[in-house]
Image 1 (cartoon, rainbow, N blue to C red):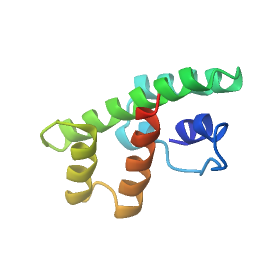
Image 2 (cartoon, one colour):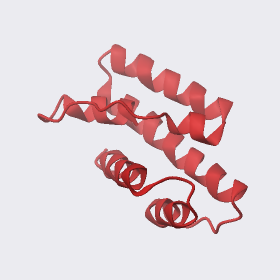
Image 3 (cartoon, rainbow, N blue to C red):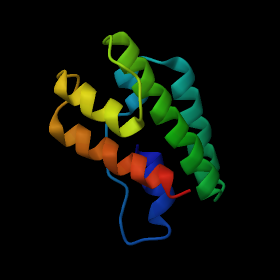
Image 4 (cartoon, rainbow, N blue to C red):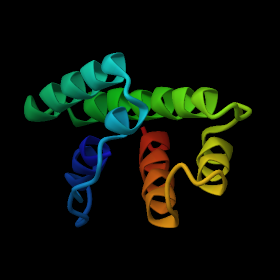
Length: 107
């Protein structure tokens, strides 16, 4: 999530916020690799590529969390809401995830 925020902060006054990586929440090694690659793109100044990869990693982590919790996988916004209702994370994380998905959709 921090990579997404950092990638778009170059175009706005908003600064990156430290968050728990969704890859850790989902326990997905592949998602972590995508996030590492997104961070590398960010370090190279390729902000849009970084945001795309980070957003894709976020979406995959949400799908895995839905699968692990036997929830229906639909739109990203619905997955975020379903996972919050199931108590997978609190409302603050739900807000952060919604913000990050909106950043990903800006691409």
